[in-house]
Image (tube, rainbow, N blue to C red):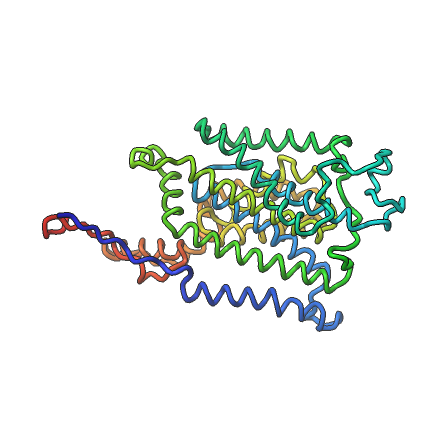
Length: 405
């Protein structure tokens, strides 16, 4: 008779994890609005409108980095095309915002200005639902998800993996960017969409609306963090990590990797689409440049810098890289690309686990015995999964015929 003792199910977050989550929640929903709206501009504690816009934009990038971690860090699939899904979500929201301009445009027409300039008489068919906010929310999720579903099904069914998968994702993104550059596609050509006025009839330029979008972005990021944590801690997540480490063994164990890879690929794409939809009203523009190869590569850089397969690492990486970019492109614009390249090379050579992995290594103590080494390994595993160390047993115990093997 055989009996297998499995480890107890880990909590969604540890005690410290929940504390950090609620601190972030209060900061986004209460502290930041107070510092921006209530605290006077002359105070050292005042959060400027520029800071609100910058942090809101970086939180959108952080969602993309988190999505990349699910597909790359936990599934082992490096995508260089996530900028496409980000841009598709942004374009869906941008189409709605262009319709919200109404007759306030330069040509005083019900059509967007670029259509009047091109002498279009009516809206093209794919703009049919752009006047509805509810339909726009559906499209923000459905369009990136459907594109990812179709592409992923054929790619994963053909067992394309490794560098070949990365290349075709980048090729898909580049081809779509060229398509959106064309004026006849009805997406504004190389200028894209801009000059937004309002959302749901409320002006975008007000401080209250900017802070509402900021808080909504922060809440979305926190919600996606919880979702990602739940996914990777479930049986679904364990299969994903097994696919990352040894896909052939997973197949020999009776699992079909296709539905697992396809599901996390679509979830990751939808997350990027939502991030793009939140990004556009805060930044005020969307154009095909968001689909460039550099944009997708930067998402991978944020994930690598922060630390793959850590969830919180990509968020940290997005803030580090984009915070540095915001400062360097103003102070030393000619050195920004050199810094980015040096950062990525340095992380690859000296911090393969990213910033979060480096911090965890510095906090460890060298084990003196093999028993202490096993305990340290368990603590490291618990830290990477966000659970209390006590919840991770030494190993699974297998009993055979009353004796332990």
